[in-house]
Length: 275
Image 1 (cartoon, one colour):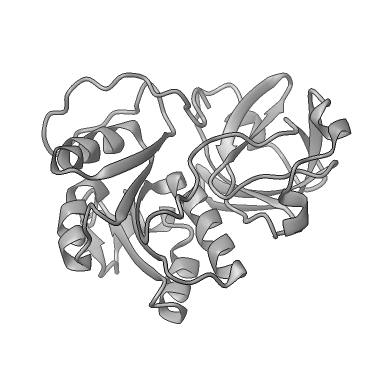
Image 2 (tube, rainbow, N blue to C red; image 1 turned 135 degrees about the horizontal axis):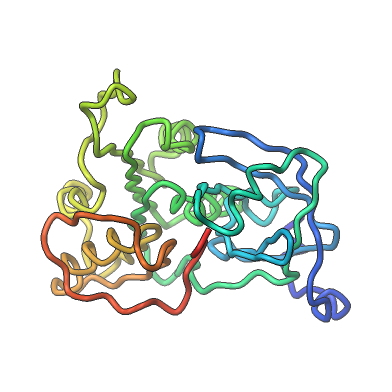
C-alpha cells in the first residue's frame, strides 16, 4: 500500500460491504501471541493508529494496524483469547489462507500533530497503533515531534517489538525514547531481564518527571488493557494531562491496579473484544 493509496478509496471500494485478505506471513512469538501479515484483495487505506476489521466464518473483530500506510501488507499483532469466538480460528491460519476484511479502516486514535510531545503507554498488543504512528512519522522524515513510549507486559517475550523500538530509539534519539517494563521479574520466564520492572501504569509519573514533560505541550495516549487505562487516567487527569484512549478489552481481564479506581464506563470503541 503506497502513501498515495492512503487517500480516499475509490467509490467502487467504498460500496463493498466486505472484502478479503490473504495471509502472506505468520510469526508466532508465544503460544498466545502472533503477528499476521495480510494482503488485501482490493486497495485498503488507513491512517496510522486506525484499525481494520477481519473475520472468519462470519465472526469479526477489530484489530489495530501495526504497519504504516506506505508498507505493502497489513500487519496485525494478535493475542489469543482461548474462550473467544474468533482468535482460536485465527490460530489455525496458515500462509495462503484468507480472512474477511471490511473495506474501510476506522478509529479516531490517531496522532495529534498539534502537540510536540507524545507520551504513549501500552500493554502488550496495545503497542500496535504506536508502531504505525512511529513508522509513518519516520518514513515521512518529519521533525519537531518526540515520542515517549512506555510498554508493559508480564513477560519479556511479550514485548515483541522491543528490538525494533530499541534500534529506532538509538538511531533517532531526537525523535524516540522507549522504555519496556515487565511486571513479573522474579519468574523463570524473565530470567536475564535487566530493564525496568513494574506494571506500566505505576511508572508513568516517574518517567514524566525523567522526560521533563509538561501538560501544556504533551498528549498522553493510552492503549491496551482497560484496567491500565483507568488507573493512568486517575493519576494524570486531575493534574491537567490531556488523554486519548483505545481499549482492547471490555469487560477487562483480571487486573489489580496499584490503588482503587473509580468505576469506568464502557468506551465507545473496544478493540478485540470477545476474542
